Length: 187
Image (cartoon, rainbow, N blue to C red):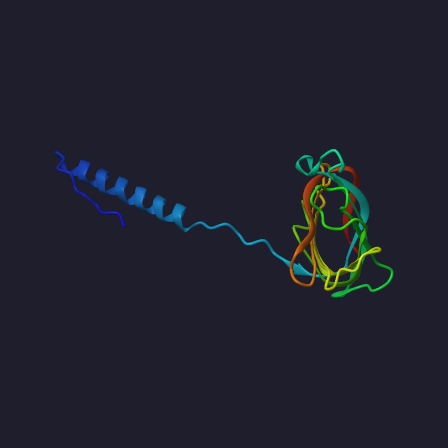
């Protein structure tokens, strides 16, 4: 809380200037402290389409046996709040990342949610659901995926895949090295 201190000044006109200056400073302080950042508008699945194939690269996940790259292939459509069941397609190839627990492709068998934000400048989609791993038994496999369509700049992909006990079996976040993920509004 600010205090107003009146300083002795000679002449009546100067006292008014000091008080006016203090009032302006206090009101400016109040306006600045009252500002807050807006919360992004998150929207449930409307009429959207997400598609593309992209290769991401994470230098810290590379070693002599792993390229440090991952591939995501996606084709998902949403209409009037419902994710279109078929055809949809989402695969994550993360087995070329160091410390990934699976050795084969992760494929989605059901989408639970598609949520988006920032559709004007950098459309971002969040997908969740259940998955399977080719040639491997992973009970309770679940995934979370974020796709950011940066238009002219490199897109960003982030994913996390866990088993039924919550143990992380694959993860990664990186800018794209090749390919493109497109997020469009459907009519």
